[in-house]
Image 1 (cartoon, helix red, strand yellow):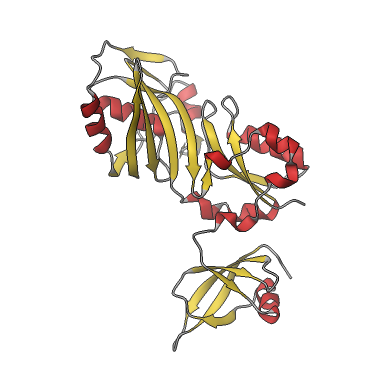
Image 2: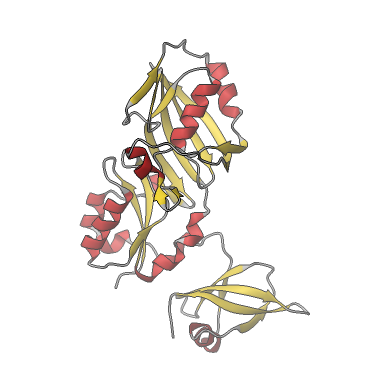
Length: 292
């Protein structure tokens, strides 16, 4: 069974689940998952995990993401993007570039964002988009998000293009509407491409055609998702111990999680450091991808 991660360039028109189904068919395996859902109309980076590497998806879940988005001014839709039904429209005066930059900069830091009705968040066991399709609207609690960087790329005939780096759980459709509100304009998201998820970048992502052409080369090592975690090389005896679920002694590093490799530099899995006295610690296995 193939194991590893594919940095997929999701095309517009496919759901994230469609991409997972595509990978399952290409590699003939059922155990496939993705990190960070993209809207069907959006394109960009979608890390897809194969085999037992799906156990590492959680370590990418909290990663920052980067996007390039286009806003179109003058109308609003029920979905927040230009694929929805128009619910309001109004004439607008194009904001000055300095005003646009000022408003964009005002979003840097911690913000509260109300999730859109067309989202997969569950309320009383039902996904919001299911309720929205029934014509229902329910109260949504604001969520805290973090915008670490946002910048104007260019002005368009009817809107703007901007880049943003943000925390997980940020809805770019909602951000576009909020930007319009601060500019005193109705606004929708009219284009979106995700340029980064953690350490997976757009310029390194593969189209579906490229994956078909070189299936084996498309798969990255499982530990490519864990570049932010320090590593340790274990002796043969310690490698066998952790593979069988036993804790081992190690030098104290001060890190919480540690990547573990054997002497042949094969990735074993992740351990958690449990501090002890006199600079020593115990390393307890957390996720083992190479069992004994």
